[in-house]
Structures are given as C-alpha cells and as structure tokens.
Length: 121
Image (cartoon, rainbow, N blue to C red; front, side, top):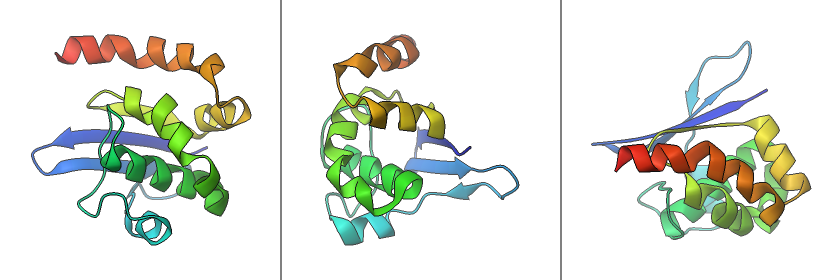
C-alpha cells in the first residue's frame, strides 16, 4: 500500500511516496503537467486553487493512473483543499474516497486534518 506524505517548507511544497519494498521517492509534477498544466511552479494544498489542482492530479495519476483526469477536481475540493501544512494520506484512504467521492467522506478528512490545521495557526 502506498503512503503519500506532504510537507511545506522554505523550498515549497513536496509530496513523497512510500511503497513497501521500494525506496521512498518524491512525486514529480511532470506527468500531471502533461495531462493538465494548472501550476507549472509546483504543488500546493490547503485551499482550492491551481497548485492544489496539480497536487490532486499528480497524486491520483500515481495512485490510479490515467482515469484520474475524470476525478481530480472533486478530489481537490474534498480532500486536497483540507490538507494542513504537513499531512499523510494512504492509498486505502484514496480508494475509499474514490468509491464515495461526495460529502459522505468529508467527515473523515475534517476529523483527520482540521485539528492539525488549528494547531498550525
């Protein structure tokens, strides 16, 4: 199972991917930029905008492949826009969201991240 982690620091926003038996790697925006160029300057999260759209597309492309183009904007609105500065998201959580990409899953991310967002302020 893949685990995606994100951190925001002085160098910008970076997303890392961990997979069992493989070396941790940084998620590169290049593949997602070929599908849709929202933010050539990189990823962002925590609000609805072009950087979060690029992050949502990149995460879903890595997780589920090219079908991500159909769902990434909703994933951005329901998941990526809620992310705090530092976050972790599992492949399983993504698959659960994909099965029910509506307000039904919003409570999970509110509980998971809203406390972290408050602590960061």
